[in-house]
Length: 258
Image 1 (tube, rainbow, N blue to C red):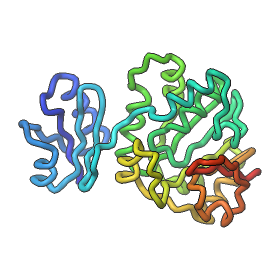
Image 2: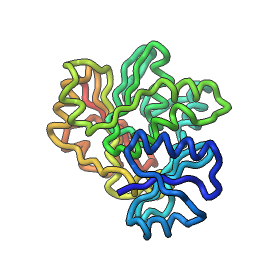
Image 3: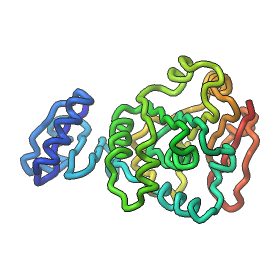
């Protein structure tokens, strides 16, 4: 169960955001009445979605920090690309302007933001996210996050979000309908340097790649299936991915050609 409430000192903006979340997700609104998040969780036996002045925060039982949308590493990676530095996702996927990019594990959309920048206005980027709360928060964040960078803002706004299980979505897609199909199954073992993703790991659905998932991804892609996982993950060898080795990094990219 999940309830929606406002920030500790609600204003018109947070009350409006709470109403929008309630209507979109079907969760009841509970008046805050100066109660703490922990108290609301105890009293209602529920997760709490907080509508603040300009963002949503999700508190599920046992979470150390709330889940909320932020561009995270995408902002730094975008700055490097603008300086004509290389990006491992762009290199592995061989992304170029006008491409279509399907992200099967959207999460915070960091990789999709980079793909949307490279693919440009003529391209197409869609993110599929199984967790309905994450899909809602990320979708809203992509279209409302305030940024001084017009380039970042435009990239975020070009991403379409679909709330669905990835394999279910792939089954309905036509053959060779996406240039690149991308998957980032959540790390089965934590990567300590990636503290920004701790709330996502705690709240998100832990994806396990299956034979059907890979088969459907290869059917749907035109050029490449790309994966990101820990350097010691068995999925690279299990599914025959060519590894894009990045020395001294905790995660690697891999690819399968069509």
